[in-house]
Amino acid sequence: MSHRAPFVKVCGLSTAEDVQVAVAHGADAIGFVLTASAREVSPQHAAQLVALIPEGVASVAVFHAEDLPTVLERATEAGVGWVQLHGQRSAEDVNRAHAAGFKVIRAVRRDANAEEFAHWGEDLLLIDASVPGSGKSWDYAAVRELAAGRRWLVAGGLTPQNVVEALTLSEATGADVSSGVESSRGVKDPALIAQFVDAAKGA
Ligand SMILES: O=C(O)c1ccccc1NCC(=O)[C@H](O)[C@H](O)COP(=O)(O)O
Image (cartoon, rainbow, N blue to C red; front, side, top):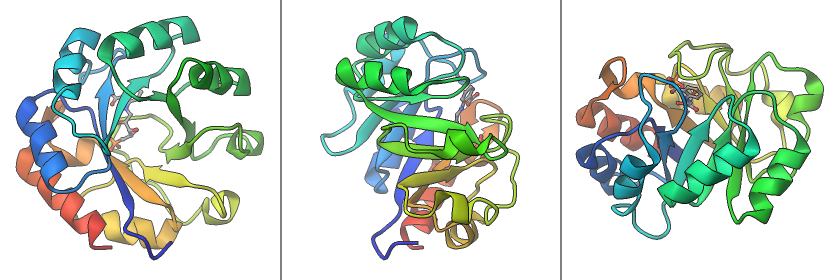
């Protein structure tokens, strides 16, 4: 792990309070799920929350199976600066998102083929559990060599309790959380968001 404070992204937010708590505690990125999910928000709703995010904190729209034209349309409507691409993707998708003015987090499953771990031009790689947003943890040390030298986020099953260990084991640039800061599926708990960001930033 680098000696710089880890990059921390909190994902699947849907209320002003949750955004404000994450920002106040020093989150580097806030994610809005614009794909089918218990956490899905409309691009219009996301736009209202993006307006609360100060300059210097990344606003991220998260997608799964959507094609690039749909990604770009929804992300533009939401007013985010970044897109996070899960699902079957190509280097061309990354290029097209860049050409449209977005920074890109490309998400890969921890058990993806080795070629998917190659650098396709994304700004950040995110290495996730097999099912994104499922809250399932995995062996965070397993991809350390594969991802060495990359800027990447560890994700999947992180909590305020295990994020420091995950960052240490994985040597990732940062961490991403959703389920681990929820009181029930899709419902964020501001106190858990604060605990997570504090813990990760102290790592
Ligand atoms: O959150 C979802 O439901 C979701 C659905 C489809 C694609 C991505 C989704 N979420 C992405 C994330 O929240 C994070 O990148 C990551 O998977 C966090 O997972 P976890 O902390 O285990 O919930």
